[in-house]
Image (tube, rainbow, N blue to C red):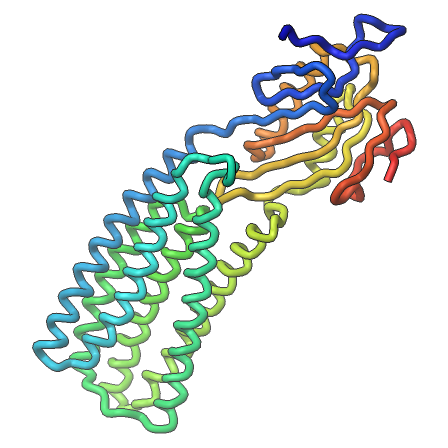
Amino acid sequence: MTPQPLQDSKQPTDVHPNAHSHGNNHHHKDADHSHSHSSHSHSHSHSHTDNQRIITIAFAIIASYMIVEVIGGYITGSLALLSDAGHMFSDAVSLAMTLFAFIIGKKSASSHKTFGYRRFEILIALINGVTLLIISAGIIYEAVLRFEAPPQIATTGMLVISTIGLIVNLVVAKLMHGGDTDNLNMKSAYLHVLSDLLGSVAAIIAAIVIMLFGWVWADAAVSILVALLIVRSGYAVVKNAAHILMEGAPNHIDQSVVIQTLSAHPNVLSVHDLHVWTITSGLHSLSCHIIVPSSLTLQQTDALLSDLQHELQHLGIGHSTLQFESDLHAHSAQFNCGITSKPPVHAHAH
């Protein structure tokens, strides 16, 4: 059927701006609203490919060294080697989960999961963050026990193992730092490796202190300090992941600036029911209602869609749904009409 705009009886050439437009600006007869779904750049997929490659290499390095430590610990009977292998195992699991999240995140959207599986990355980041907190709690608990009953420590073996572990973790951390550290999933895996790196540094310092001064408690003291640093990082990851899963607004996007930007267009009378959220790291969405003059033609509405969509992309919002409403149209509020710009010309029905 040929698309036909709704027409005002007094102004046959004018179009009531309440027709659907989905990115490609198709308009349907008798539709009530106008939507714009802007596409984001291909850089998101490129960064995901780079991240996946980096995680794969990091996993191979960590897993290989872990196997060497397990074999060495079994042959020599060294508990220190087996203990460090346990730390490496936690890193390997974290990296494997991160890699799995990137792979699953590429799955296409479906009728049941309209945004695809992109949020799976955030879920894994949350799990990694919680794991960091659990590991920290375990380190603190063990350190307290060692304060009460300090064990005999083979400082030479401890120093050698920690130094090798530090070198391995430095290589992996350097590799991962070259990835997209703004990606929450990538950041959570990086923090796992960084925590192990800090653990190696702490063990080296403790070993040297014990060798020089005989202060056995230094091992537990340094371990607690490192654990507290890990808690801080783990909490930040958990907080950010939970914020995204709760549909919180991105921290770097000021909603007042968004409203000012949209309202600056001469054909925008007011903006309300604004929602901004993050689908996954680097992909932000927006939906809002925009009051426009009832005299706007279909062509003018299309131009307005393009202009606003372009401005939103400059603000870092890659996916937007804009619902245009005539200044003669009374709209029933849905979730939150409290976020508004200048008041509409006519009373807003609630």
